[in-house]
Length: 163
Image (cartoon, rainbow, N blue to C red):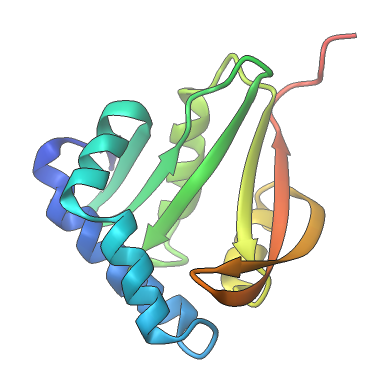
């Protein structure tokens, strides 16, 4: 089941982010940099702000939160961003990612493009986005919390631009 997040979900969102990041980025991003990022980006105050200002959806299995997706709202150009999509490892490849994506798209009906940024070595993430209709726009190098990373930018075209 996919549903909108509530303040009661803050702890679940934090737990899912930590578990998913550790599983996905082990050997790619040093653990202390992961911890620093997660502590800042998923503090209770930041998750509360995400709930208020963005679209935060949870995937549940047997009443337990097993994943979440976080989307920006559509801007004046018709663009939105999939900020995060994380699933507990044991619930990956069970359809929850696709359900979260499609549920999120239903909140973005007036949008034209959905962007997502994925670390280039995140093969599972890249495969998911490519399989679900995202197109690679570019790859670029950036500093993430002071650590050099190569990032892939993808776009999902929600509707054709007006002529």
